[in-house]
Amino acid sequence: MGLTLIYHLAYAKQFLKELQTIPVETREILKRKLEQLASGDYPFNLAPLKGPRYQGIYRIRVSSWRVFCRLDQPNLTIYVLSVKHRREAYRN
Figure (cartoon, rainbow, N blue to C red):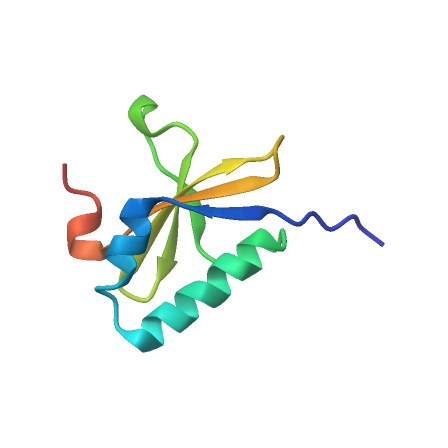
């Protein structure tokens, strides 16, 4: 039997603001994915961003949306930074 870690989810103000622009059905899926991530289960599209500027930042694909977060494993915290539609997600 393996050890299951439970992470705390911390939401940035920017994420909470952007969340209001997402369709309700997608918000529910996104909520389940973040809860799944917090339970230490990563069976979905969690991938690190590339480049030194984005070190430590991961993205999660949820339909046409991308959630960006930082995993703080020593403190068991996931900082949820922002959520953007995929056509806007990687633009500077």
